[in-house]
Image (tube, rainbow, N blue to C red; front, top):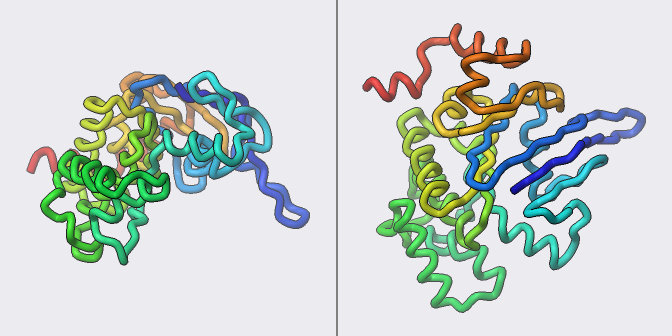
Length: 258
């Protein structure tokens, strides 16, 4: 379980202070696919980067598996991050390494035996449907295939949690559905709890069982996805939903009908 307790984040630049997060408290239960939704600049990515301590809170505490990890450093921090995989919008693959070498990289850092690394990587590439492409380089893959490699790499250390920061926003609608289906399978079959950062209501509705809506660094609404969509309580959520309905038919819906 992940708990954020009264987390605040203030950036100081010369004489100016910018509050990126303001008194954020969230509980993400084991097994959740938990969505953080908001417009650009709302604080979504800043929030998720606090979970693996890529950002440190100015105020508040980060609790993971009943342990206060807020001040972790050194070995404790490395062990924490082993348990938290992360995938990004731009895939962040090493262009000079093959698909297999990208997946084995986290294991190499931890000093595992080469044969074990290769065996583990092949199993993960089978899981994401890319084992036959293990010799290829990222430049030889489509965007969706690169994201699948990134997912396999994020799973290399057998994490309990995965952070997905706009993981499908660079993909077309058909590929988005395929990647979301893969993430749901990872959650279901491997028991990996996921935190999904997205600006897309379609993505949230497709994959998340619970969501929180953030605006200006403040959580304005939280609950079961179906309840939030059916009966939004905040003006921000109602505006996001109205904006989505005003746009052309969603790409995910169009893809389902195709």
